[in-house]
Image 1: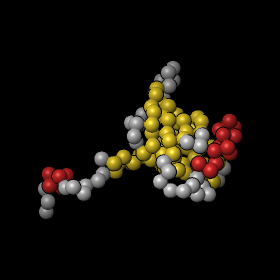
Image 2: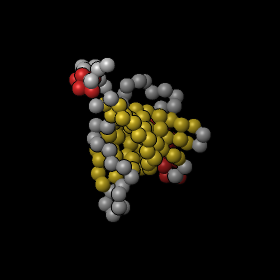
Image 3: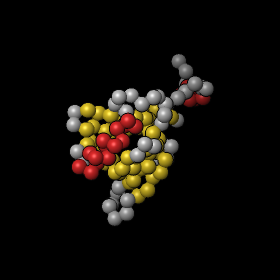
Image 4: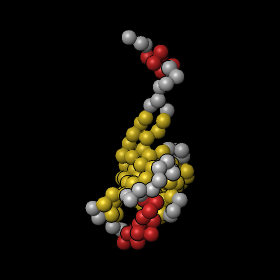
Length: 120
């Protein structure tokens, strides 16, 4: 059996921490989104952003580029996230739904969740 020191010292060790969090989609463009979260994320954090409109969930991989506190709100954070172009946009991609999402944001008829994974 290997010791913890040997395992952690191996060249091929990769760790992933995951967390699901609910948030508010403030704005969306073809390059990314502005999200509001009760949790602070570090710039560089990557994850999967899922937005549900009615019964349909749209998703894309994103990276947190900017983090700012929302002043006067207590403990809320604005997260600027960019879409990661790791795959071509599919039929359920957020990148293909930008104009439709903008309409739903104004009407407040969507749910969003951010599942993050961070390589260590």
